[in-house]
Image (cartoon, rainbow, N blue to C red; front, side):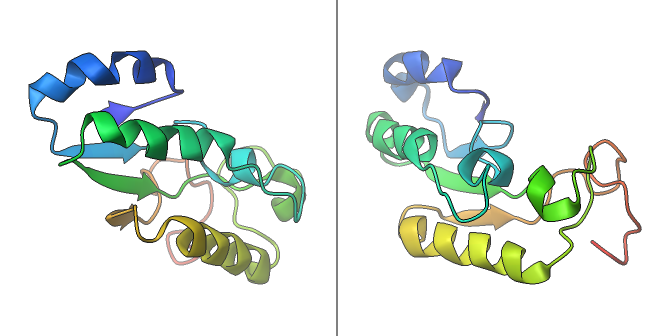
Length: 126
């Protein structure tokens, strides 16, 4: 199940009867720009909402899809541009895994990196 923007959370109790095997968190308001909109300030509430609602589908796996970079990290470029300092990326990934590594089963390394809307740079830079 691809869960986006949280509105589907209201349906999770009913979805529990559908034998959902995986929940893909992409375009769910839990990517880097939402969690760390300001450098060093992490907002986990939306991510925690998904984790808390997993109780309705306990046998399902969670796949977190990395996508997007906050403007402060890529020089305010819109679209899919790499962070200027990969240390910022490493810090975000480390914080995410430290906090939710026991809940997230799979990590997808970028959404559609071959589509310029999601990744505007060369594939080598990806």
